[in-house]
Amino acid sequence: MDFVFVGGNLALDFAGTLKWRRTHPEELLRTPGDLARWSVEAGVLTREPALDGEDLRMLRGLREAVYRLVAAALDGRPWPGEDLGVLNRAASAAPPRLTLGPGGLARDGGAAEIGAEVARSAATLLAGMSPVMGPVMGPVMGSVRVRECARPECTRLFVDRSRGGTRHWCGMEECGNRVKAANYRVRKKG
Image (cartoon, rainbow, N blue to C red):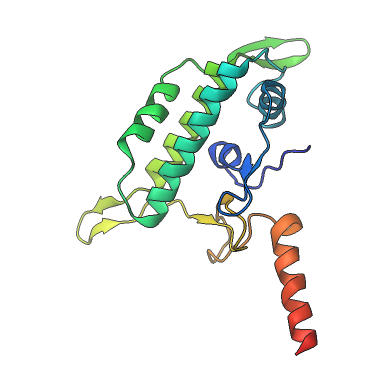
């Protein structure tokens, strides 16, 4: 199983480790080993940590809190207080330990450090998405554009950094090409 990193933000990529939430949920973090491997592939740590089932449960809980917080922001709803508490507790932990050596920079830690990196990424993202009070105009949306993939089955979230703010798909490989191919087949039939 390969992880994909199409969200443009560590926290959104972490939230994307549960795919197809509305239809047929696919859990990509089935074991503590999957989570350890994700932490290295995502660049949070440089070596896979020893994690256990409790670590997996805790970090899945953080993942779901991040997803619900971003979904609330996208819908213009207040952030759920319990989820905000989960995020803030995780963000208050120490980040991965950095060690510079002949082999380069090493980033070490365990579940708490993984959670801290994800939570800090989410907090920064959510702060950029949240409404702010403008000096004259009143509430104005933050400067970060986050979207959900336009493929109906997909529930991945991503930062839209396209020039015109018109990105539709989490990624072309998994969603964009499939939707475009399906639309092409419909046009050819008609």
